[in-house]
Image 1 (cartoon, one colour):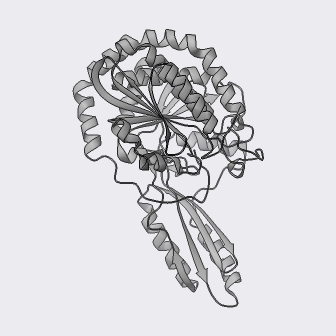
Image 2 (tube, rainbow, N blue to C red; image 1 turned 135 degrees about the vertical axis):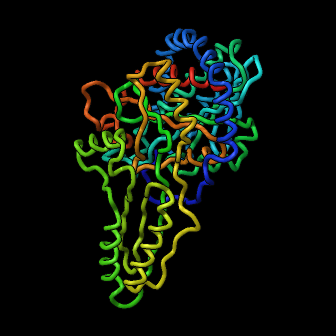
Image 3 (cartoon, rainbow, N blue to C red; image 1 turned 90 degrees about the vertical axis):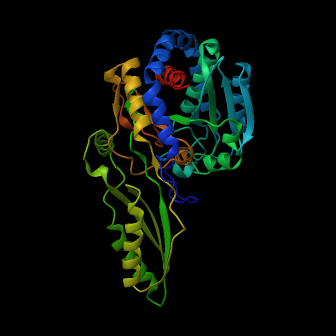
Length: 420
């Protein structure tokens, strides 16, 4: 989950076209069969996952002790590849940098479904009160461990499995470059999935899940405004203050504000349902702007307003990239299908839907969702009685409850088994 403010930019294609229609048609016609398949595997999945729990916690601790920043995930990729080869998966390494792709073939015909896990640690500049080196304070070590765990569970159930499951272990999520690199390197040429799924840690109670149907993470836009004249620096200061007023939300500054953010994300029709998170910084005769907004079509109106105010202040130029970095918008149909599945298999009290997007974070998983439909779900990692800073991504105090690994493995193994 990237919190960085300056990244390479592009725009997503519109979600929901032919691929989503095909997936939705399959769901409507084969839903009962998928439910039956999931039910038949739920007990074996639980038994196998229980035997793997200690091994997976040890794996997470190993990855946590050897954090590697975006584009540097050589050791992490090697650990993942060796684990999956030993389990009998077909493994390809070096995809889009240090990306690892592993394919598990079931014994019966079926669909191809992908699961993505990001591997990199958070760079020092993106940590809140963190260290001076990359550190796993965004939970990617847990994401990777859950991905490996799901692969190991399903590999041991290969004789009952239909179709194919494709595991995509992505580098460089924090720099928002890894997904694009993997796509450019032909990740979906290895196996073309009908859909793709992912988990991300968040400060909900450990073992709970929040499904993002129609929400996700905002994209990001940035621009440079240039002024001229001897008083340009002073005018840039005034313009930056004026533009900052476009923002409707500010980054939480206290634990209480973090708690309110998490509450608002789970509540319909709060200020987070429609927002602008805007930063404007003067630098000599220039103003650098970086902002996120929701819903995504608002970028057009906000760019127009920035230009209007800048030109009114006498700006010589206002430069934006061709398109903003795309928002990660989770398709509604697949998200609701996952919510129903999890409510049925792990309990209604542990599953609910998110009602807003997180204003301060982005995800290049959006680029995978542009290619195929899928889901993105938040996994609760907060230990009972612990302060929110111990489970909110990018905080130096980040200390997730490791029991979340087993919950994630069981939930996602059952879901993927149903979807193939």
